[in-house]
Length: 263
Image (tube, rainbow, N blue to C red):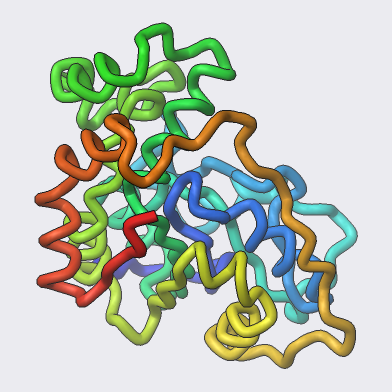
């Protein structure tokens, strides 16, 4: 685990670090309603994955980058500060940066069936105008589109936009996370549990962060859901994705005992 000399403790003590399209917006909204929690005004600060991030930056320099993301009238020393940028789990370089910044960082991870995650990701990119290929070619061409961009964090990088299958390789991502952080600093939740039993999930989050549940429970209304037609369980699209992601799902089950409803 990486450590560095620091004169002041890091401001951030937790991250909602992944995964994209798994309910991190809902979790951040619920958690941000707690009076002891401070999250960026715009959910994703994107500090550790910024294209111009300096790997030699001190704790103080990283905190200064975060400063503009938080309201100026917060009470220092009272609140727990966090970030909710789901790309952080995706790449070990980002995990390493966070470990250097704060080896005691606590990670909250939401996982979603990688088939559903990939479909949601694809339709998000289509809605944004970034993706022009139909679904099947986009899935089958992903390996070639990402070639030469595996460490590319630029704003227009194919790694950010077209990593539909790669982001579903949760076992590899968790392997990297546990190389730098102990399991005691990681909380893994299922997106289906957050949707079906948000009160129970939030109780686990509060306990993990070491804070009491708020006196009044937050409104657990859904934040948003993608506006696209979801393929049926036995549709060719879903069956193709199950086949393409078979190795990732097998490795996740074998290494971490994590499985997903076939949907």
